[in-house]
Each structure stands twice: as C-alpha cells, then as structure tokens.
Image (cartoon, rainbow, N blue to C red):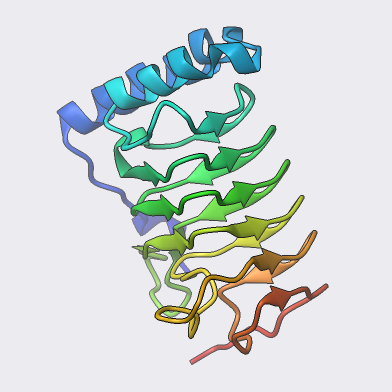
Length: 183
C-alpha cells in the first residue's frame, strides 16, 4: 500500500456543504438538547437534505457525516453518541432504533489497490429493526436479508456485534468477531 497516492476528489460545493454541516452538527445541533427540541433538529437535518419526518428522534450527540445521504422513517430513533458515516446513502426504516454508540459506516478502502482507493455502498436498516448499543453495521449491510416480503417481525443487531460480514439471515444476530474475507 502506498498512501502517498491516496486521493479523494470532491467538488468545491460539496466541500463547502460538508464544512457548513460540520459546524452546525458540532454546535447548534448539539445545543438543542431535550427531546422537545427534536423538531428543530429534524428541520436542521432537512435543511441539509435529509429525508426525515418530524416525529422521528435524532439525539443531539449523534454525528452524521452527510444529512443529504440520510433517509429516516416514521418514529425511528437515532440514539445518543451514534455515528452515521454515510458517504453512500443510509436508509433507516419506520420504528427502527439505532441505539447508543452504534456506528453505521458506508465506506472503506480497497486493500487490493496500492492507492487504497475509497469504496462505498449503501446501508438499509429495515422497519422495526434494532441496531443495539455499540454495534457496527458496515457498508452494504442490508438490514437482515431474506426478510423482505415476509410478515413483519422485529429484527435485532446485538450489542457490540458486526454486520456486513457474511452471516446467515435471521431475526437476531450477535457476534463478538467476524471472519475477514480476502478475495
């Protein structure tokens, strides 16, 4: 790997939008501290391009990289100290919960590329899913595959677990480690 060759290219307008959002997310957004202030927080997210209903709850301590890549369903909750690193779109379903300290990450790097190129893929957290405390959901995580078209059921991503790591479909997933697949 030769990191001297690593580059990310963003337009000036994108960089300005990121800079403005960074300032708002680290200041004004965090000052709107009570649950009663969820509507002004959601309006700020909408101002920066998020698709979010006013009834959903996003805690002020959450870090959201790009609101314009965020879609949140009715009555969903993004809990305290969560990180939404959404270089690609993240969609969170109706009544879904992203618990405290969870990390949703749509980006990584191509370890087979000497320049370590950025790669990304969207994440979808389905309706009524629960991503529990300290869980990591990696790029391409599709929120419990195989559940589409079935009757509604609750799906849980266990505390401290990893997703996007070649696991079997099922209503509950918990792991302490995951294999690395080097293709």
